[in-house]
Length: 420
Image 1 (spheres, rainbow, N blue to C red):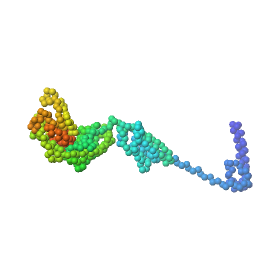
Image 2: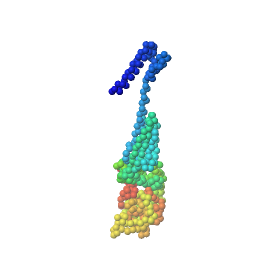
Image 3: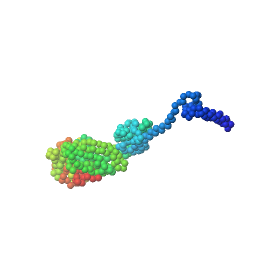
Image 4: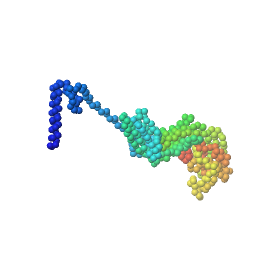
């Protein structure tokens, strides 16, 4: 404490001296001399008789400029999100700033996807669909009004392959088929949202023809019109299914727009009672051939059957494929035939009759449901008829084929065709 006191004493003396000096100045120079402040806090005036320094105006300290509000970045999807639908919009929104830089890329390959800024530069969104079962990195930098930058990153993955759905289409793009060919769509996964799928498939014809969908199962749907497609017309199929949830989280992986060409109207009228076939091209009788159809034990199917696209110049038929075993009545073992054009998946063909059946063409029905013709007749069909052309069989006691045993759709009246 002694040291502290010693320090104070000289300072006290200094203050007394200053006060005394100020008093003398006031006494000698009046009040005006008290306004001279240039010496404070720099020291005492050296010469009290010097001209006084002008009075300084003390200005208030300006308020500090408010700090810029930091930019806030919001990313969609949030980091760590899994099973993002590939058509989901990947977006960045910036509050209190603008987008300075945005990159959406495949994490593994580094491939960058396209996107676009909003006019205000406050948001960015992707313009390219994502891939299935792929990891992505979304890196966005924003800048605030003072030029300070901030960055946010989102990493996410898209719908896995286990939830990816596609479809097999028939006919496909550019195919030429006959006037009776229904459009067929076979999905890889069950479709529960059938109505939504129908709305996403737009079918238009060059003639303005309308049609209906029929679901034979959760994976098989077909489309046909009330009447045959007009000969030499075009059918456009526009499928916008990419990203659609078909049900149970199964996501469609494609869009497709394609045209199907319709050829001539070719119709075979097969008469089991008269043992003859008449073939009409664009409603004009063009060919007539003697035939043998199914016998009493295996009568040919009645009604309408559309030719498939399965044609075999040489084919081997085995009785076992239609359920016959050695020793069964009608078992024919194995036979080789030519010019085979398939009518049904269960084994009905138009083909050249076997050598033993040739004498019975136009006379008697000997087959197991097939239509046997001469070499001339079978080869004409093979070379001039194909998928979408139609056979109409009459005067046979058998029922029509099941609609999905090939294409038996035309045996269903149109007013009953539409079905889910």
